Length: 376
Image (cartoon, rainbow, N blue to C red; front, side):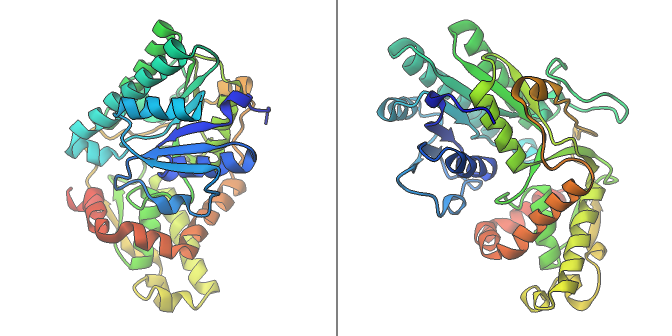
């Protein structure tokens, strides 16, 4: 990795108590031993202070607050003399955006604009100088791909199909506009589907893992053949660090894992790993007695095909050649055995961190189940 600009080692990280944000904070502090981070997070259902446990309190401060609070963001930038901000905070669940789009507009559009206003005021009007605003976005802004179509590039049309994707596309446009109009040093990364530790069990991978262990149904939308490009969260964090260090202001970079898999393939990987884990470790049967594997059966019996959600995208895939060329990025968990090994490690993480996911699901578990199949 190229050495990071010293101005970009101390960071304000929004949404840093969430899945990707917390993984990034951990990776950044580990790779940059002298850096300091302030995490700004509203601690909605998706934020969890347990994701930051064990970090050095002298190097990682937590502030509970809303990204729409522009004076608060300005005060943090001034007080800590930050010249770089990494923006993860977002509402990101497609089903939730269908049931209640207003919150997605407020958080993803209004919230991002609030951060941009603060950055412009402090970094351009009050204290001009080198700075960087890194906006983390999604491949869903491009819409759906035909199965035989080439992967989305940064020049692909933006055609979001869900309120979530539309809100992220709007925030991307605002970031670009602040660069073009006001000279803000801003970059955007659009990532594919992440997986890995600390992901909330309302998303497909951890939900399937937890449901297997609890003996609950495993929901698959439609025919289960929707294709996604799967990106390990550590690869994503690595790419963000590269973009912070050497990305060109005003540019967008697609960050993918080059691992296209159907939902059905992902489910089979999870089922296989859990079934084999119970064979290897008999003590798991007493820990998870409701799991079919505990009695020698397969978790595959839990599969339940459910009606697809409105506006569902059939396929996502990202062309990462620009990030390879300009940032030196390459996913480490690449196609074939490396991907399957990384995926098995993820399943193992949830098997060995049951205290974490049991604490975070709490009373929300039934709501997540309903989001995924009971409302269909």
